[in-house]
Length: 97
Image 1 (cartoon, one colour):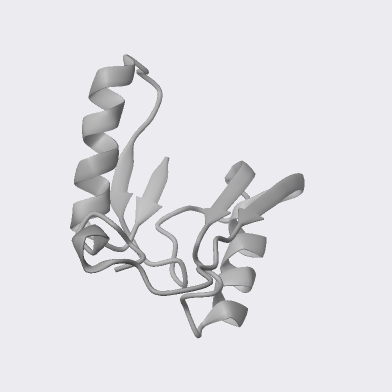
Image 2 (cartoon, rainbow, N blue to C red; image 1 turned 90 degrees about the horizontal axis):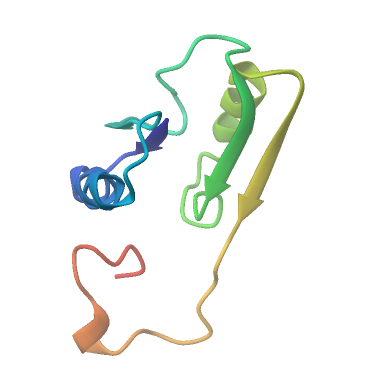
């Protein structure tokens, strides 16, 4: 399950899913601080680009700890720009915008 706070990214991910042919994937809107998942219901959590953009980091870590099963894992990645993007690259689908 993929979760994102923006409808634009859920739409973009769903379009990619349709092209991939995968059948065991879903996407929905939700907040990282309040994931729409049961306690201990996830084997692996992947967090991409959330911690450096969201001031509620502690809440996000707590929420990840709540939903990941004992013995599970959380992986995170962050991309930080060294300079502002050119105006032509600032679009609604580009979360750096």
